[in-house]
Length: 55
Ligand SMILES: [Zn+2]
Image 1 (cartoon, rainbow, N blue to C red):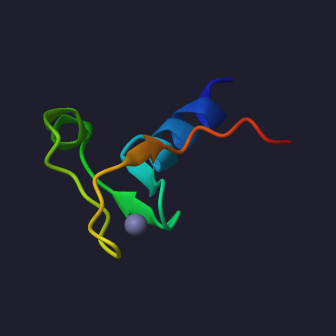
Image 2: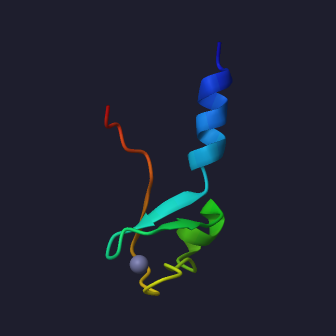
Image 3: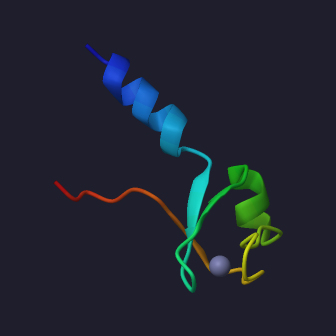
């Protein structure tokens, strides 16, 4: 059907999780790749995408 995947992509595309405090941050991917993205809570720049394949 595809609708679900699209919705998921929309939800998770620009969302990253801080590796330090694990808070979610919404950042455009271009900013992440450029290294200009940082966690809003602890200001650390170690972010990872949200794609968790947990059940
Ligand atoms: Zn953080």
